[in-house]
Every structure is written in C-alpha cells, then in structure tokens.
Amino acid sequence: MGTAYGDWLREQREAAGMTQQQLADAAVMTRSHIAHIEAGRRIPSKEDARRLDRALNTGNVLSSFRPQDDSATADYFEAARQLEQQATMIREFGLSLVPGILQTKEYARTVLGSGFPPWSDEERDKRLRTRLERAKILEDPVTPVVWVLLDESVLRRPVGGPEVMAEQVIHIVRLAENQRIRVHVMPLGLGYHPLLPGMVTLMRFEDQPPAAYCEGLYMGKIHDAPTMVERIQSTYDLALGDALPMKESLALMRTTAKGYGRHD
Image: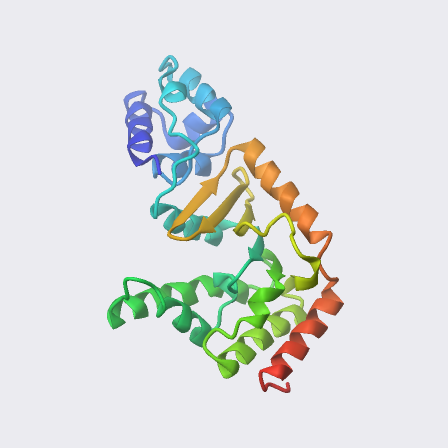
C-alpha cells in the first residue's frame, strides 16, 4: 500500500534535512503517522498530503500522486495486523467466522487448514503462530478496549466440529465474563442488517487517525480517509443498535456451547 509513495516521502524529508518529528510538527501531524506513511502502511488523507507538500515545499506532488483509496491487495492484511497491535480500541464484526484475535488454537487451525490452494504444514503452522500471537493483545487487562459484534451464524456454524466449536464459544464467553471484552450477537431472526455485506474491524489509536479494515474473499482493504472511516463507524453503530444486549448475548452463547456438548 503506497510503498513507493512512502519511500519518496522519506527521500524528500531527508533531502530537506528533517527528522520525522520535525516534519510532523511542520505538517501538524503525529510522528507515528508519518512513520506509517513512509513504511507504506497508511495513505495520507488529501488534507494531510497538502500539508506535507507545504511543509516540504514540494508543490502539489504529494497531493497529486497520493495512492488511490480504492486499491486492494493482499498486503493490506499485514498492515492491518500491525495497526491492530497499536490500537487502543478495537471494534470487531464477525460475519461468518470468529474474529482472529478471539480464535482458539484449534479453531484457528481449522480455518487456516481450509484454504485454497492448500498450504504446506510448515506454512500453516507459521500462520497459526502469527494468529495466536495476535490474540496476546488480550492478555493486557485493560488495553486495547475490545468490543465484538457477532452474527449469530458465527455461533451456528460448527467450524472444526462440536468440540472445537464449544471450546471457542466458551472462550469468548469467559473473556466477556472477565470484563476483558464486550460481546453482542446479531440474531438470525433479524434478517438483513447494515453489516451483512462483510467483516469489519474498527481501530482507534492514541497518536494517529482512526482506521477501518474490511475483508472479503481473497481481498482486504484498510480505510483511513476520515469520511470513509466515519461512515463505517456509523454503520457499525447502526447495526449494534439492533444486536442483542450483552446479557442476552452471553445467555445465547452458553446455550449454544451446551448444544455442542459443553456444560461449563
């Protein structure tokens, strides 16, 4: 995502004899945001690009050649994973699968073993370690704040079989009972809801603009344009208003786990 653009920005900054912090101060941005742009993990908004042009005296080059926001490549997932580790608040919506940071080892193993073309055992195990490493952000008792919205179909689909699914559902219930996450379920009886088209992750940060990550089959997209992030946030909020309250959501999840044969 914009790696060449980021490289050019870094070259112009260094040619101007400026540190990332000095450029951030001149452009009224944060140093970490500059670092993400230079690394190709973020695309500056149109206004950010204009401020960078003014700070570096580059005319309108950074504005004119700003990467298009509608591109989508496999590299987005890696960028999203890195942003996830820096977020102070994460709001997830799982449409058909449990979001990655909440997956148990056996659930994740099943998901990663079902792709096409199939991965080698070595590649699958490598990806499994990465996915389990992501979940470690929940070991901190406070940060990030995590809210989870699950379509009921996530609970009903027996990924890995009853035993794996029961363990997975109870894992989420326990995280909620320990007040580590908040979880709400979108009931199937609701029919259509605004988030039905796909999976969404919303992220907020202490020192950089918020971002959203949307994922579909073989593609993912990070959104950090303010108007688009706000639109996705509003859609999430709209859907959340139709979800079951947390108490009822947890009761449904316990009943579901019991149906899979788990009686904790």
